[in-house]
Length: 116
Length: 114
Image 1 (spheres, chains in turn purple, red):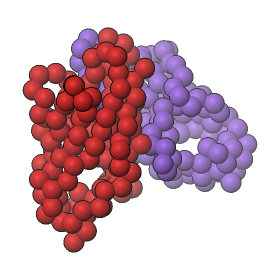
Image 2 (cartoon, each protein chain N blue to C red):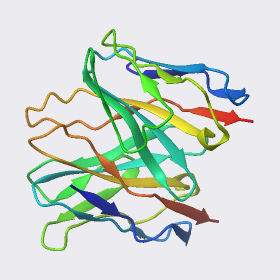
Image 3 (cartoon, each protein chain N blue to C red):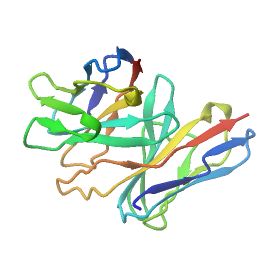
Image 4 (cartoon, one colour):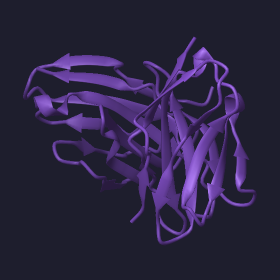
């Protein structure tokens, strides 16, 4: 089944303790992205990647890191989490290659992160 | 840069009634338009998309949307809703010729009452 898999689904952590949320897709998509979803704010893009070793900041990158060493994986790293990073996080992928094709995103099921 | 406005944060409706969720966008270049649905405790799922061609787009679960270039709108409609349509709906826009990075609206919560 074609899908984007995020882990974990739920995570409670303490301020300052480094964590990684994993994201993997099995569709050979080039484009991957991380979003956070907060009430009243909709989805805001954190980071995106156009291909392996190519990443760039989205609208709210502060406090986050990403890497794209392989096409299928795009982990989100919080080096020193803070309570304002408590949110619902989504990973998404898209096969778009900038050639006039845009099939829309496939989203993961989400990771609900609480930082206390 | 593009932007998306979903005019209603919440739309309550009775079962079997018609519904329209409004979306307006702003962009100086050609756009691709999307509607996504998010059921409770789930990720977003693509409902329908407009890339080119016919301005009336049909999606899953009986939804359709119409692209109106002059009014820069892409409203989502369903002639008769079910309880199971209760969800959050997001409109998104991306532009051609670039990185195709989409911008999402803030979402509209559709609440279907029995």
